[in-house]
Image 1 (cartoon, rainbow, N blue to C red):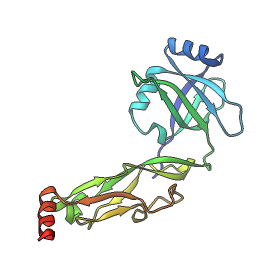
Image 2 (image 1 turned 90 degrees about the horizontal axis):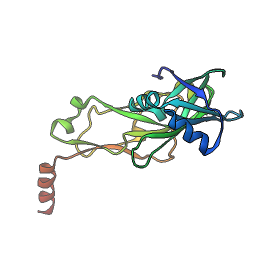
Image 3 (image 1 turned 120 degrees about the vertical axis):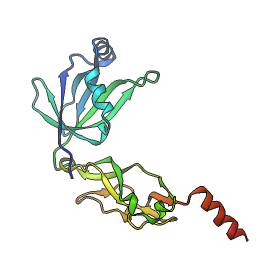
Image 4 (image 1 turned 180 degrees about the vertical axis):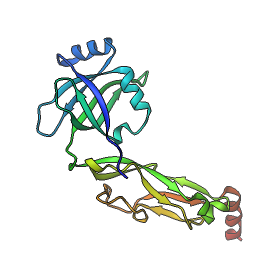
Length: 201
């Protein structure tokens, strides 16, 4: 299921360079830039609290946005980077890349696990150990999946879940060309110790 495209608003930033960026920050904005798609870059600024609120909602780097800038046509973008203050961890600069709906892009997509109650291993007290909470996929910009789903039905202790065990949304593929691990069902500590003693005996 593709995500709904969310609107973002920004303003054109006059002036370039570090001095103009510092002035924007003093005025309560986060400076940024829109680039790509064979078009000249556009310097922008976003209200600090407005951007911070959206960053805190999560998945900012995994979403397609409809960016509205006064005096400019609306453009679909993805965020390619948020620079942060090393002390306060607050945004200091944001980069957006223009994309078409049919553009192929690479980005991280959240992994959702379902049917925990249908896993014999978890029922026995096993632990789901998640190796990757997000997986980098190549996707179509206009059809970015909200998440990929891992079904735990029938998983027993010792089972390892690889990327090839997951049904990916149509039109997507993993960017890593190997069958990497996403998660596993580990034995509870007590059972692992008993099995280890039995093996030693």
